[in-house]
Length: 441
Image (cartoon, rainbow, N blue to C red):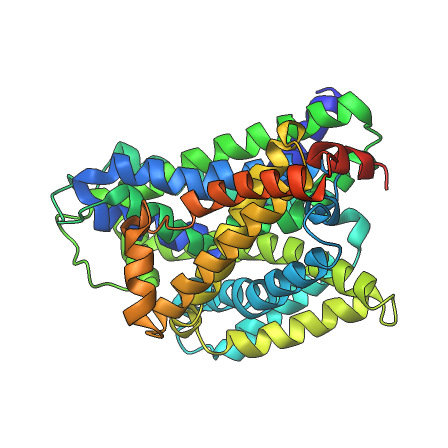
């Protein structure tokens, strides 16, 4: 095998593993169960949010010279720091990382050893995380070479058995809009955020192999395609398995209980061990990547007053404390965070992907401003605040009842921002030029 092909596979496997965490294993079967015979629409919706947008996030960061701050610079100098803090602390430290540790216990160690206290699993989980994340220069290489191959083999066994020997036939479940349900449910995977956060270390790994310029871009796209193919096979398989169980299993099962039941039906006595190993590897690979990125960001933000390894330790300790709440309680308090931040991340991704065609920075500013405004209203609505005013406004927006109330305002904001910036402010600095100009920073 040539070095180039070997590097492509390692990078693609590593990117796949960075995305495939706790939510990626527990949510597709639940969505399949809920959608039943509407699983095709659900699969398309889940793929858009769970595969296409996260992988486009890597392309957006690539277009920005490998740095998230370059992508956000046309909006405001402070936006990168503020939004990154919300993403990394609000979602990363308090949601994504602890949820993966808790899932490792509830679907892994706790299944094999029912009497094992959760704190032991959590302690071991973060000890392994610290070991792999403490060497920031080799995070991607370690994940792609050692952890992902085992994870992929186990997942293919589970998915292959489920597709060749289906549990049952999908039935009508009463879900009115499977596409919208799956699209919004995939917010909980956090993968667009993972893409934005982890793309820099993925791209840095390519540079570490010695690839630059067009070769580096070709290597990045190759890794994206490999990861995308893997995610499509695994997500699709898990969703179809869940849909096949819609006629035999009740819809009231928790996410983790459903996964355990499905794997037990497919693999029998060996299912618990296979699931435990798959869960541990899936959660560890994602956690290691996210911890590394957050530690790098916080170290830079506070001007290296604390070393990278100290930040890794702090993140592990805080996330371990939250993990003790358990998966159910963590999921219960997280949806509002995703409702507030996820649409903004999605709009940023599209701005980065199409940056060469953006005429000025006003497009960025207008699109993000109105997206934040609508997302904030959606969040307040979720808490039951100001319903008499907010609900009619959101209901009047196109796609508002389907969860996409932010879409048209984002477009309107982009057009309005362009006009204001072009004719009132007089600026003609291209958003694309802004990004390209920072590529070598």
